Length: 226
Image (cartoon, rainbow, N blue to C red; front, side):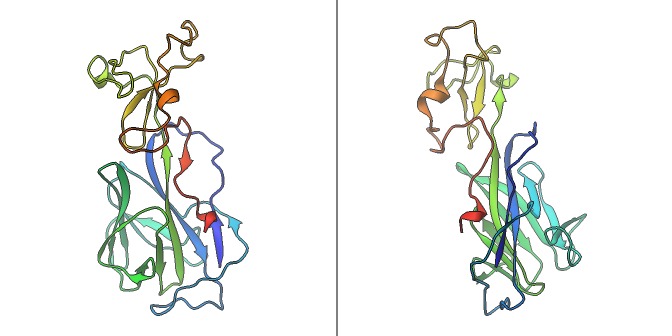
């Protein structure tokens, strides 16, 4: 079984937040892929772009199996149709998930028959037994870095230093949406290190979701590690 690995991003994006990505794993001709068997056999892994990218602000996205040999094997369709899957990013507590509505009878999730409605997370697998398509789910986080949003200026406080956010500061948004100061030498060269609000650099981990605070995008889980 060949795991199609996502390439490292080379073009920066201005959009921030959580984007779920679905990667296809090739099922070899001699492997069995039906409702009674799941393919599992390590093999050489190749790089490939994700079959689907779904942002958290897109709402419900309907997809269907694309033409044979098409990129990734899945294609976005304009509306619900027989044999389609509905996918939507949802948040619960301090995490994000991928909700899936199925209009197929051959869908397996993590080796078990899928319900009409399923909740998926990073490292979950989706098998479409009919067309022999296997996919893995992961998510990529794009942190917001810059001035605080206008609606929080003078109102919200940084959970680390407890100071209110001002329009002249620099912040980073955690995975769960909490803002922290992240002033540095580049953004505030006129201030000494002792006077800069380096809250992100000091606490390193978000106190709410307990995930690492970072200013760079990253995959939550890399399919190549399986």
